[in-house]
Image: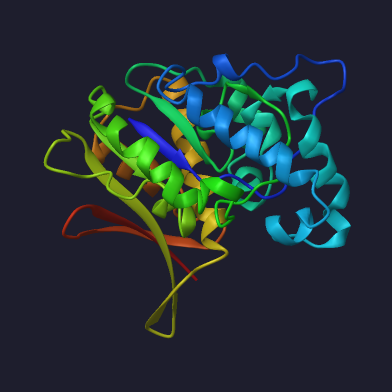
Amino acid sequence: MLVLLPPSEGKTSPEAASTTLKLAEIAPFKTQLAAAREDVLNALEKISAQPDALEVLGVGPRLSAEIEANTHLRNAPTAPAYEIYSGVLFENGEIAKRGEIYQPQLNFQVLVQSALFGLVDLQTRIPAYRLSMDTKLGELGALATFWKKQLTPLLTDLSDHEIIVDCRSGSYIKAWPALQTKATTHQLLRVNVVRERNGKRSVVSHNAKKFRGMLAGALIEANAEGTLSDSLESVLQVAQSLIGKDDVIGVETSVQKNYTELIIVTV
């Protein structure tokens, strides 16, 4: 099973005394993505030092210190990704806590889609950085398009996984969209959230991160306890364990053309 998470815009900087960035040790696809990661890091360092860096990177003046820090990422302190990423999904999934019991395995892995690194395993050490997948990064162009070209050829390398649980949305899906193809053997499960009130349903957008995080955290815990198998049925069992927690009232599935939609129903 592969669980795919989006990153958080907000990140927690590790203590200054920790290990610095080692690009060659970033998992997964250490060799396959090495050159691409170097290219993006070089471009980010260059653009972050420019007078118009805030405008190019799409942030306001209050984040100027974070953009300046982008110019020192090679020497910045690092920590496991589960400690770096924060925000709604990671907080509600208690990923910082559950990351301590997570170990990547052939049949279970949790990856974060990153605008800087492409993909990052939760255990991989990275620095806090500021970069969105919506960015056009100099000569590299739109990052979603750049990473799509890098990641699409690697789909067949995921043959150890029977199912992919996709908790991403928006530009991060665009960066690696075709997860289910004729050449792949896994089943794609996309997680969406709806709100049900007075017999009517509406799609939940921003707050969907909360419930996707809850599911991701529960999957990590179930795997650590040895109760998770690489199957749709096992994911559904874990998802159903959320019913009754934080306004979750049901879990459903809907078969789409190229994937199965897992729908978390809330009030």
